[in-house]
Amino acid sequence: MIIPHSGWTRKSAQAVHDLPLMDLLFRAQTVHRENFDPNKIQTSKLLSIKTGGCAEDCAYCSQSARNGSTLPASKLIEVQRVLAEAKKARDGGATRFCMGAAWREPKPRDMPALIAMVEGVKAMGMETCMTLGMLDDTQVVQLRDAGLDYYNHNIDTSERYYSEVITTRTFADRIDTMNRVQEAGIKVCSGGILGMGEHTGDRIDMLLTLANMTPPPDSVPINMLMPQADTPLADAEPVDPIDFVRIIATARILMPKAYVRLSAGRSDMSDEMQAMCFFAGANSIFVGETLLTAENPEEDTDSILFAKLGLQAETAEDHKRTEAAE
Ligand code: SF4
Image (cartoon, rainbow, N blue to C red):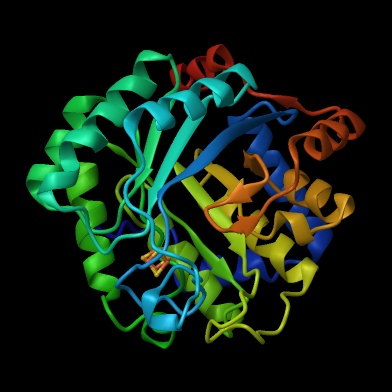
């Protein structure tokens, strides 16, 4: 059940966000060190298991059939192909394998294949995550019983701004699915996108909605919009890098135990900006060249950056230790 708790209000969250930058970064790094090893970064690999032709109208997305996308719609890919990709990801050091489908919701006929994917990836010793759109009660239980660890369902932005970005579902629909997922005992991965024309207050409200979930999400992806041609947000203004870092730091302080993930947009960030985000408390990234359809830095680039910063990828054993300490 998502019940707002009284820990954070808009006023107190805004006050944190608006601190002088050095004070904000110091506070975020202090909270980070109290909860995580500051030199370890969790790495996930994301695979698109069904691309394009989506019935939703998310204004940022090149997979929406309503955005005039020319991206061809694929069918759900075969289970064996997913497992082969998962094995490659595990051998490359990823500890979590995320599978994303461009759907409003899965159909009952898709469930056997989705269950087989979760069971197969889990059997390889990796954490499993899926993002499939809305889920009903039966689907949530089926995925949980197959061993699904995380369900990604981003709230994208504030409740106030949501209808400016998506009209085919509501903010409340989003919260309903997250409620179901949490009640079934699956961990929630939920965050949003900066740079869609929202105000700073919308960004803070988005974090506040997540922080006031009971419990807050275990994983909070923060994306920087990568404007996609032919989408309504193709000409959106870029996000100011310092504004982005402020949101990462605020997320870390509001949700001390969550893995805060630098997600889409990382390929447009300088090494210095990424380093500042890690200092502000980001401790998770996607590895691999593509994120569903958007670019991501190549793994070699990440290894070089990690070496420069003295960062290490969190191992499965590290992750278990962090969870046990909570
Ligand atoms: S973001 Fe997801 S739900 Fe929205 S249009 Fe793209 S694939 Fe569909």
